[in-house]
Length: 147
Ligand SMILES: Nc1ncnc2c1ncn2[C@@H]1O[C@H](COP(=O)(O)OP(=O)(O)OP(=O)(O)O)[C@@H](O)[C@H]1O
Ligand SMILES: [Mg+2]
Image (cartoon, rainbow, N blue to C red; front, side, top):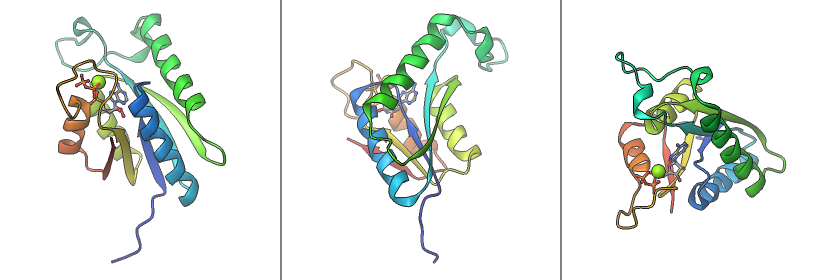
C-alpha cells in the first residue's frame, strides 16, 4: 500500500469549545502535512424552510440572523485556533449538518474530516453528539473524532 498523507483536511465547527479543539488539531495536521484546510460551518434552517422537495433553501434566501451567526462561528474559530503557516479557507453551508459535512468532504476529495465528539448542544447525558454520531455512520471520508 502507498504512503498515506492528507492533502485536503476539513474541520467542522459549530463554534463550541469542543469543535475549536478539533479545528486546532486539524490545523496542526494541515501544517505538518502542508495540506489545504477547509473550516466549515453548516447552518440548519428552521423546519419551515425545507420545502416540499426536501431540499435546503439557497443561502441567499436565509435570514440575515442565520448567516450572521455563521460568520460569528467562523470568526470565533479562526481567532481561537493556531492557523500560522496553514493554507485555509472558511466555508458556510446550509442544510442538515451531517449530510452537508459528509458531502462537502466527499466533493472536495478531502482525506480527513475532523470533528468534535460533542458540540454546542446542551444535552449532557449523551456521550457523542448526533452530528458526530451520524457522520461516523455516513462519511466516505476518514473521520477523526476529538473528545
Ligand atoms: N452545524 C455544524 N456545522 C459544522 N460542524 C458541526 C455542526 N454541528 C456539529 N458540528 C461538528 O460536530 C461535532 C459534534 O457536534 P454534535 O452536534 O454532534 O454534538 P452536540 O451539539 O453536543 O449534540 P447535539 O447537536 O446532538 O445536541 C462538533 O464538535 C463539530 O465539529
Ligand atoms: Mg450539535
